[in-house]
Every structure is written in C-alpha cells, then in structure tokens.
Image (tube, rainbow, N blue to C red; front, side, top):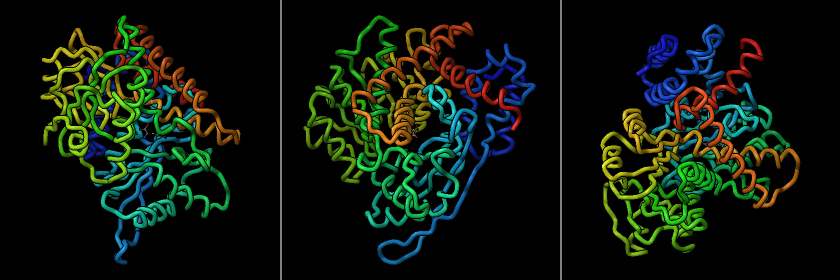
Length: 452
Ligand code: 2IT
C-alpha cells in the first residue's frame, strides 16, 4: 500500500491519464512503494516534480509498419519507440516483437529500463520499443521485409548518440542484422553503435548473447555469499528456454549448479540430472529456439525426462527460483507453492515476472531473499553498453575482458542496492534498494540539468 501523499498522487495521475496500461501501472506502483522512504526524506523531489517527470516518457513514437508476405499480401503492424529518460545517457533498450505488444507493455519496459540502465553504472538512458508483429511462423524473407519496413521509420528517431535499440523477446541476432542493414543503407554510414546485439563480424560483442544469463548468475552468487552459502550444488528452477535461460544454464554448467526445469507455452520439463549437466543439453536449447516450434516438450522427448503439459514449474522443490521467461509468470497461487516448498532464494530474471500481490507476499516471508529483475538482468544491457564502447573505440575486446567487466558490474549492482536499502533502514531489501539506487543517480542528474 502506498502511504506517502506525493507517491499516491503520482500513481493516481498515471491511472487517470492512461487507464488501460495495466502493466505500466504495475511497474510504477512497485517502484513508488520502494521509493517511499526516500521520498519522505527528500522533499526537494516533490518541489522539482521529479516523480511526475519520471513516469512521463520524454517521447513516444508510434508508427505504421506495412510489409508484404511471401504470397504478395500486404499487412500493417504498429511500431513503437518509447524514449523514457535521457538524463544520464542516450536512450537505450530493446525492441520486442510479440503479438500482445501495445503501448502499456512498451511503457512498463521503458520505465524499468531507466532504473536498470542507471544501475549498470554506465552512461545509458532508458527506452524500449517494439511491435505487435509476431515473428513465429514467418519465413526468413518475411521477417527481413518486416524489419526493413520497421527501420524505414525508426531510423529517423535513433542514432549512436541519440537512441540505441537492441533485442528483446522476438528480436534476436537475425532481426538485429536485418535492422542494422537497413539503417546502414538509409544513412549511408557505418554507424554501428546505433544497435547492439549485432553479429560479431560487424561490431557485435563477444559474450553479449550470454550476458543476461551470466549476469543473473553472478548476481545470485553475490546473494549467496551474503547469506554465507555457495552456488555449487544448488538446484535452480528456471522458466522459458530462450536466450536468457540458455545463458543461465551455460554458467550453471561452469559453476556446478543444477538447473532442473525449463518451460514453454506447452508446459514444463523436469530434468533431475540438470539441464546444466552437459554441453549437449545446454546447446540443445539453441536448437529448440532455432526450430521455431516453440515447444519445450521436444527437450523431454530427446533426453527422456518428465514433461508436464499445461503447467508451470513453480511447484517443484528447488533451492533457487529464477523466473526467466516473461512478465507476470508467477502469480499468488504459484508464490504460495514456492513458499510451501521452503524455497529460500527468489531471483527474478525476466522483466517484471511477478504480479505485485505475489511479490509482496514473497517479500514478507522472513526466510526468503527476493531479488528484482531490474538489478538481476541488468548484465544484458550492461554488455550492450560495452558493445557501444567497443564500437566507439573501433576495437574488439576479448571474451575474458567483457566477462570480467560484466562480473564487476553485477557485484557492484548487488552492493549498491544492498547499501541503499541499508541507508534507509530497510535491511537486506534488494527490491527497494535497487529502486532507490537506480533512481537517485537519474533524479540527481535531472535536478542538476534544470527543468526539461
Ligand atoms: O530488457 C533488457 O534489458 C533488454 N532487452 C536488453 C536491452 C539492451 O539494450 O541490450
């Protein structure tokens, strides 16, 4: 419940302005809850209208994306780019291509991105974009034509010092390649810092594909260290089987942790030995993704492990829960199962994977450590920023250099979050700590730069 009058007023204002954007309301509510103790202590925030400015994007671009399918039929999708906050650096954040995309989803993601990017400690502002285009079931040529049409409008709003998109759900290396190709043709210049997650041959960074999952595991290591435990031998329940989950499994294999579940739209699989028990299994996730079938049952069929159709993995016994698929994957019912199983570590990985009632219920458990996605998954965008650095320098760093920087970044994100919570008397509250630490840097930059 919000108690502070200023926070309440700002929340009511967004409800009134955009009543249909429920994911955005959810993200803002969760942040305001965490910020309350700081808002109480810093009256200059209200005087400067900082929260009102924070929740209102600097710019929202909506555009028509017409493209032709293989049969010659023309389709029209809607494109978005929400440029949320540029106080500490050029706008930065991914593009999501998924059927359910609308302004409320892109705004929740862009809002969260502002905090996340601030937490990386690197100079990147917050943005997000995407389209209600569904790449599943489309041919390569259709995806290429869609990406070209999308960039034909987007290019006028972005640039390596203006706004630098990357991938998100439905946008991987293939889509970034088509998007960058079109940008380069339209601009007539090799300005490759404009997009990240590129192929290695034209400016992509080593370790960018693994970065979100690796970063999440480095963050988990810090949490475990804080609790006097170690990662070796821990069982982890994950969701999804995409890029992020693959990165987690790959790092779990190196570190001797055991990822026991994966999920998909069709259900979940339970691998007692661990998906992270062999390179063959970890690599199979790439094959599943490339097949475009969008079925996790294929894993069960290939490796002879149990498959639970239509179910989520949150009822399994594990040391660590890492929801790594999509928003609102864990609701109150799932949270109750997690608590009943005596799980100690709830580490969000996907953007906003927990409904707010479930999140507060989990956070209220004395024996549970809850970590928020905007801190845990920040390694992805963090390495994107390192990709931009390499592009600016026209140099290529080794995988070891990138990994060392990523590791340092995640250690620091955990540290500043824990310290911010401590400073406001909140104990080891990583959720509020990440909100406060991410917010302060941007808010201070906004105040120092005058009203805009
Ligand atoms: O949610 C995210 O942080 C991303 N999709 C990555 C954004 C980026 O610019 O690398």
